[in-house]
Image (cartoon, rainbow, N blue to C red):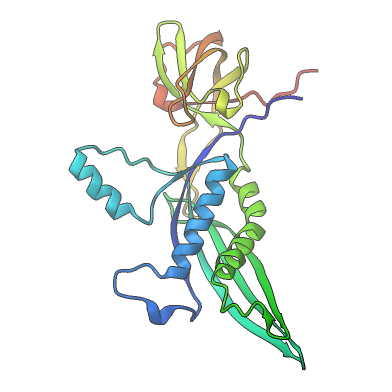
Length: 278
């Protein structure tokens, strides 16, 4: 079975708000609302656990900038996609029945979230999806014995997690709906060093195309910038890997056709070879 190349896009959750009335009375100035922060943390954790993305922090951007000023380092990385979201519905109910010797109590929480993907350069929101989830717990008592638990606070977390999980599949499919590509880091003699290695699905012997990016022009119909089709100028082969993690791993390659002589490396990208050989 062929290895699938999984270009790990850099993503960040820029904002996740609470658009319901739940918990608003608990808010204080300059604090994130608890429900929105809870949803943001759950989504961030689920995206990290998926292993498909490089998830960068954005809600605490001011804290990160302050820390960089203290350490005299400035290593903030731009992202490919910004995730914006909100909790649009949230409610909880308690149902119960009481008999001569027994009683039951059912607690139910319902949540609905809306998630949008936006281009951080243009602000264009290019995808939107929603997800709904529910969590239920039940307790009972017979002749004075059994559970008489108060409201189960974990239901909030479970309902929001279920709603986000309901929206995740279509969101991830859209995030990954483009060909794998990377960049040339440096050309050292006959060695071409590119970003990405075995942790992104590359293997020794893989052949990749080096493509000169096309000119960017403004489309008068939409007002957006459009990159015209580029041209392949060389092909390279993966010979070895370096680095130890998904953020610093790269591949050492050699040119097998074409040439990179005199080509500015910031004007080219490396991509899969999409043609089919018969």
